[in-house]
Image: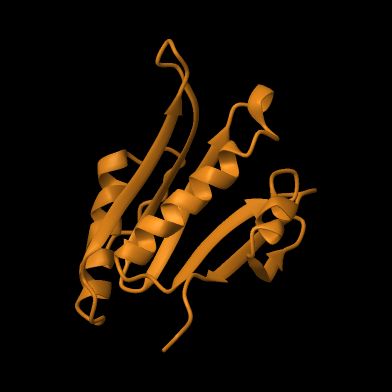
Length: 141
C-alpha cells in the first residue's frame, strides 16, 4: 500500500474518490436519483444578477448556492429565488430543505423565510461562523 500526500490534487483524482463514495452510498439508500435545479436572474444585457442552485434527493432539497448582486439586495430577488426552488422541490416530492451560510452572509434572511438553525460551526474558518439550517417544506401526512 502507498499513501500519497499532496497539496495540489488533480480534479480527476478528487472526482474518482467522490464517485466511489457516491456509488457506495447509493447502494445503501432507497432513493438513488439526485436531480439538479438552477434558477438564474439576468438583466437586459444577459448579465447574471442572481441565481440559485440546488439538488433534490429523495424527500430533501439541498441548496448549494444563492447569490444576488450586492446592488440589488433588498428587492426580494433572493426571496423569490428561494421560494421558486422550494416550489419545484415540492413538485418533486421533497418535504425538507437543507442549506448552510456563513455569519457574514444571510443567516437572518433564512430565519425570516422559515428556516430553523440546527447547528453552528464556531470559528469557521477562523473568525466567522457557519450556520446550518433546515426547513419543513410541507406537512408530513
